[in-house]
Image 1 (tube, rainbow, N blue to C red):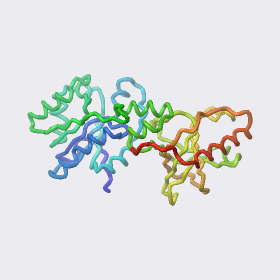
Image 2: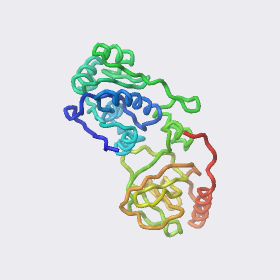
Image 3: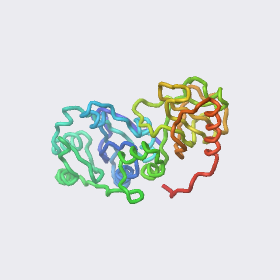
Image 4: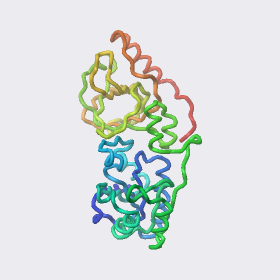
Length: 313
């Protein structure tokens, strides 16, 4: 699989293009429908399969607050590779772009710069100044250039609409099954293993402390059953992850630490990916380290037990 080209300058874009428009945070099943609609078209005609997203996220631009992401850039690129995308264009979202009318956005960005031959968007896509442009507007404007527009239908999971915000809500509540159904895959946390305080090793459960991207969205604090992968591991390893402040030892900083059940070795400095499989329990404060150790043992036993059966993604 060729690596996705990531560009922020429209002058560097491969043209002509088949364009999927949106923020695509999470690259959930609804987003995949938007992108997959372009595959057949771009395969039949000389058009480069292109995802156009905004940087920073428009909500971050207007609120002035950083937007935590389900899929930071590195994760998004990996997932786009699997979908056959050739290039990711990160449009700089600034005041000038925010002020473009829907007509100007199509004329200047999609037609003149990207030479779009086909466009695909979600059913609720809005664009142009104050998101005044609707999917119907996009279709009408693009038709003047004889550019077909595909509008993806709403996708649901367990009869509920799929959206990035719904996935965030589920993760914050520790509800992994609905989050995974909407994503079409387990939610993952990828980062570098860094030096910790070695408390886990002292208790007999050595852990890998993970440094995540600053803009990564985190799930509910607590203990999780996980599966860990890394180029340094011959195969995926089961594990137990704790996300929180470690109140038993009066921790003051949130940490993410993972104990691999059937593996021992040195992962310091290496990148690992932790796939969440089951929320086991909230973080809690214990009266003693012995009580904490006993609970960790029970967590490990729970992580070794068969997973509850759930419907396939």
